[in-house]
Length: 400
Image (tube, rainbow, N blue to C red; front, side, top):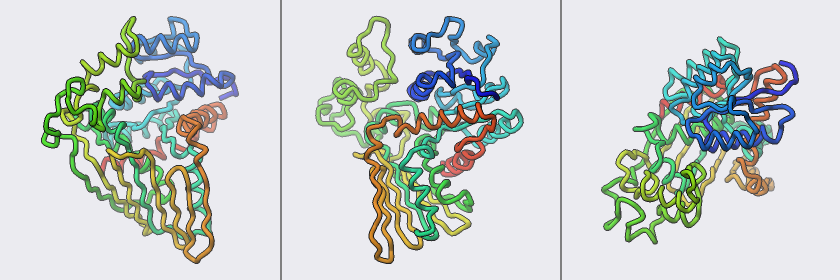
């Protein structure tokens, strides 16, 4: 392809897509948003205004977009997970490259089909595995490749999901096995698996998994807990209060949509009264979220990797400990320390500066940049292609 602008359609206008579109908005010399697709009229109108799109560039469904015959080079797919596979196949068959939010599909067959269709059509699918574009995780990758630390022996990588995310997304929200057909580990940690494979290689010979208890169940509800937080006598001291999360702190509300003429406070009040997000975490009958899961990978090389998901935690970070022949590398997303086994002085690397950057330390932008540059240059290769990302998906299905 020539060095002209890449013409992009955005399909599914949720939080993740809007973040990726910030890069497009800031780089209109190389990329252009030409169409948006979403069933929600308020989301469509918001993007229409931000990008000065005419009415004939706004669509309720992808079928309508395809039928329009618009000239499109690529699309961003950020719909709910259930629709990723179907829309990806349609997009490739329509001749578009894809920036695809994780996960690719809901089962191994769908994921393999996306890879095969990408090969057959010659259309690139880049999975939004942003850890490979994050400066902290890139530094860990560089360190394990340094000859001074020696051969890798083992990895222990822990994803602390956090209390608020667990309650909002996986307990009250729809990301559970019954509704999404995938486990929390798959939804939240597939790119952690990808990161570990990036460090240790993908010569996996065995996968084992162990899950913890289900904390958020009817039998674990505190005495006196009500069905909804609004009329619960325990709400003021409950660490999972929806009133505290949404109304007092105003966190996790970007995905909520206000009705016409409704203020933000009125919207939150309605959400608390009427929606799934106002429920007690112990009274969400469709919830099947486990509090902890450990997946162990044994490699042909002899490396042993543990990937641990801890859900209702006070912190929301990832902790990685890598045991190598000559050193142990430890990191908690804010700092990396290389502790040498021969008594040499440790090396430390401060990544606290990344916390203020937002957008996963702008890794969200770097994945879009890599995607657009691959199209403009014509080499059609990115760090997180569907081919590269397939193994992590298959491992998560085995763990599930």
